[in-house]
Image (cartoon, rainbow, N blue to C red):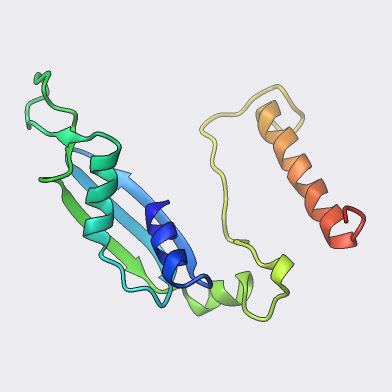
Amino acid sequence: DAVLDACLTVDPKSKVACETVTKDNMVMVAGEITTEAKLDYDKIVRGVVKQIGFDSYVDDLSSVDSKGLCDKTCEVLVRINKQSPDIAGGVHVGKEDLDVGAGDQGIMFGYASDETADCMPLTHSMATRLGKKLTDVRKDGSLW
């Protein structure tokens, strides 16, 4: 969120698809970003790590002092590219403001469930149907 906020603060038309991965005193920021903002990813990452309280890493699994991540010593890896033209064309180029969206996104579940006919958890099925209905009524004008 901090990377997105930094982009939008400078360039409200930024396109941001950014993920974060952490493991053993390392933070990786990866994805596709198209923005006019010039970001210091290292500073943003370390600032968030500090803000949420990760300030101690000891490379010893038995250490009770280690929080697993330290803002001062963590490795910050940045793997950010510009948004591909194919995704831009599918998501926002040539579209109306209300039709802009990340059509390439997905959700992954690690299990099947017998709660519904589509074998998805009931809460997921309900949220998906609700989201679809909200999109339909927005597009057909009956919501507003």
